[in-house]
Image (cartoon, rainbow, N blue to C red; front, top):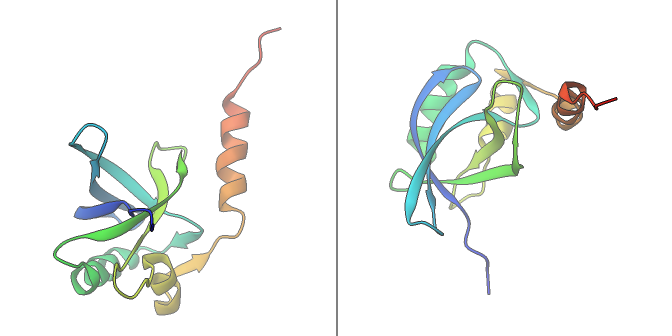
Length: 124
């Protein structure tokens, strides 16, 4: 049996690298509103308009598939992840790179993990 995929609705795009998303929490039958930053890419200032356009075209009844990296968060507390079209599987980050408004960032996961370790100060 196929595992259900988390569904998300985009509320707004406040910045070129931040997307406000609402997603259901099946365990509590409630919703969470999170700030999402695209994983594996660095967005230019022009990406904001491109994100809005992509969401308008690809959202199926206002819903997109939410892809997260174990719910990791960046230095600003944003969830690191991506959005995908539920029918075609096309991802937002892949499309932004193809449009030339984002560049791939292969060390993104390493940066997130190392900043978490750098913030930890062991007791002596």
